[in-house]
Image (cartoon, rainbow, N blue to C red):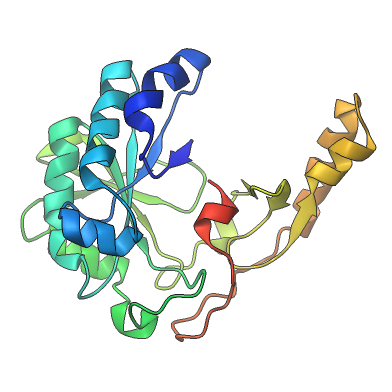
Length: 236
């Protein structure tokens, strides 16, 4: 499950007991004021309490997702890694994607590549190439200083991963979204409502939808928004 972590301090234990096995938690800064600015409303202390609650509940290989932006949080890369090492968490560093409308910064100016992230990490740690794979967009490395955690890099701009992407997402409206960088989707809510008590119809709709998965996203470095959709509507 992908989450902003804001409710995990209360829900981590019930989620674990309900059968959820893995968590991805968004964390772009360890500075409370900066975190609030980046998330617009986020409470860093509450999110950290949620991360600790997830560890206490029994979750393992919990992953932090960090979108790195030049001049906004690139100076915290190694601090975020140290935080992850201390709590035995995996980390994925993500190049910013042109999703939703923003006014706080220029995406063209804030772009920070995965190669730059690795250069910054190398100032403090020793990166070791890894054969780990989730058959998705992340390319994984390990740290010689903390070999138990995985460091992932999601690079839609600098190292396009479309050819091996196997990801789809369920939106809050019940649409199966086939690519973050396109609007290709199938309305599964409509399929359920039209075929009550017929799960085979839903299964067929999902399988058929895979034929609509596009060859590539439409992301560019331009400031113009390619997809006017926010992640809180997209889902994880």
